[in-house]
Amino acid sequence: MEDEEGIESEEVNGEEIEEEGEDLPFAKAEVVRLMKQNLDRDKMIRERVKVEMNKFLGEVLVKVCEQLNEYPYTTIEYEMLKESIYPYQNIERINEEKRRILMHLHAIKADCDALSMDVKKTLKLKDVQEEESDPAFLD
Image (cartoon, rainbow, N blue to C red; front, side, top):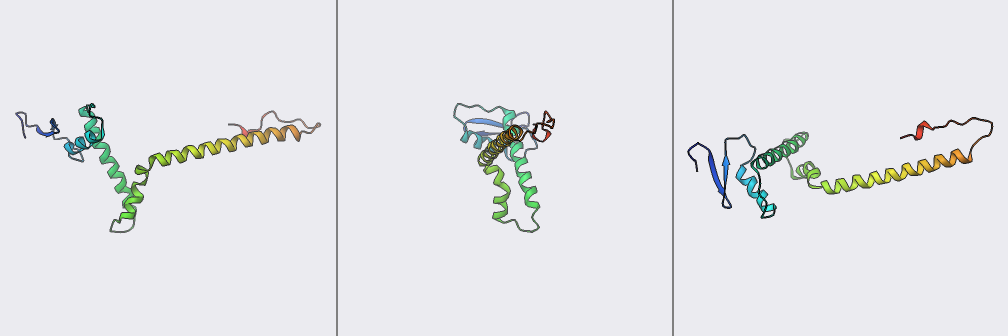
């Protein structure tokens, strides 16, 4: 449909969607339909959110394609796509692994600090003045 001002509009789930000739990577109506499918029924989506979601999805597509371009082959295979989209599909697992690694590193640091204190206590020589701070174990 086209109204008086030349703005195209579509109806999606009873709601009119206007397309003002914006340069969006995907059909706005389709993005809005998918958003409404995955949001609670009582949620209303502001126009700027609809546009920015569309742009964001386009940016993700560009980044995935850039990674696919790094392959030396002329044909894109499914395994290449799977590898390229892995970070987007497994973000929770990646963040969980990051937390696990950081906790492990903190435990190692605590062990190093404890060993440093033990060395300073037990291996103290009476005739040598000891440095007050150990630069190797400072934060």
